Amino acid sequence: MKKSLYLFQNGELVRKDNTILFKNEERQRFIPVENVNDIYIFGEVDVNKRFLEFASQKEICVHFFNYYGYYVGTFYPREHLNAGYVTIKQAEHYIDNGKRLWLAKAYVRGAIGQMQQVLKYYRNRVDKGRGHIETVIATLDEQHERLEPLETIEAVMAVEGNAREWYYSAFDVILGNPDFVFEKRSRRPPLNRLNALISFGNSICYTMVLSEIYKTFLDPRIGYLHASNFRRFTLNLDIAEIFKPIVVDRLIFTLINKRMVTKKDFDEQLGLKTEISA
Image (cartoon, one colour):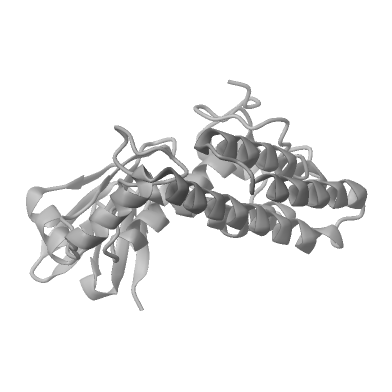
């Protein structure tokens, strides 16, 4: 089974014969290319044209992140599965407002359903705040019902935003950890540790979905909930909405509640000496 390769060390990634070699001053590591699904690069890693040609030949997406974990971009090899008919149908469903609305609502329904599953899992596992979690679950039911009569993508996105805001209000109840408080959703930059974990996890989720789309005939540039504009990829953003609660948020809760990530660990990793406030 192919796996994702994560590189956090600095070094060089090259093609060596018919496999991948990662090397730096400390070591060399051969990586069988047949076992690689995609590559995530977080360290200062040099790649050359020969390696990228090899990655393209082996249908491997390479995702790049900067020093602070922000997503930079993806080397997306030339599509190996091409079907003009599928692309035409994707565009047709985007241009047709009724079809696009149906798909956008389906993504949001899926996302709300997964949020509720996460909340139900923790409802009976927290000592305090069960009442608030019940309220949020009920409110998400209401948001779900509001979707049906909507006639614009903007209105659908507003419902998704309201649902997620209610969902996020339960995070402090689930965690109960003063070192990882939610406060409010903040991005670019995230203003506290929990928001930083959410943003980082979401970025990984978006790229994971992008790698999976590459294995299909779908064009990742044509999304439905997120407008297809001058951004390169949008379909992965749509699909990731369904998976973020169960993949990203559940993982974050586990890491914090089981103290696999602590305030000290987090701040030392970022080289911080003071509270995150800006």
